[in-house]
Image (cartoon, rainbow, N blue to C red):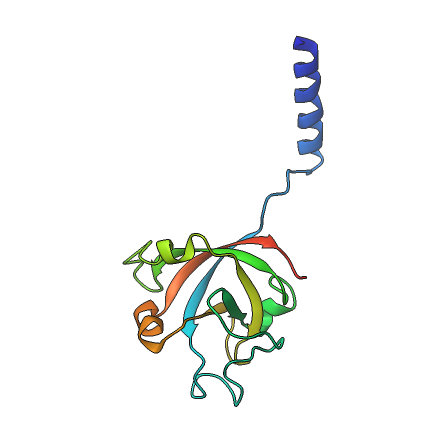
Length: 144
C-alpha cells in the first residue's frame, strides 16, 4: 500500500515537472452590466438574441472579443457577484439571485464593448439596481 502511494507521488512530481497540471474550470473576472428587452437597449427585435433564442433570465451577452475565444455562443457559466465595479461595495448582493442559475451565452454586445458581459434582466428597475458590477465567471462548458 505504501509503495503505491509513493509511486503515485513520483508520477505526480514527474507530470508537474513537465508542466502538466490538472485542468479545472476556466475562471474569468469581468465587468458586468445588465440589459432588458427594450429597443433603446437592443435592436429592433428586443426579445430575440443574436442566436435567435428568446430572452429570459439566464441569458448573457458577451463582448465580441470574448465571443471568439473565451465565451463562444452556447457556453454555460456560473456567475458570482464581486461587488461594484470600481469600489467592490455590495459584494455578494446579487448572489442569491445568481446562485442556482446556469447562464448561457446567447447574445452579443455592441462592438465598442471589450472584456465585458451583459446579464439579461426582466425589468429596467432591477437592471438599474445591478448597475456596473465585477463578476467571477466560472466556465462550465465552452461553446455548444
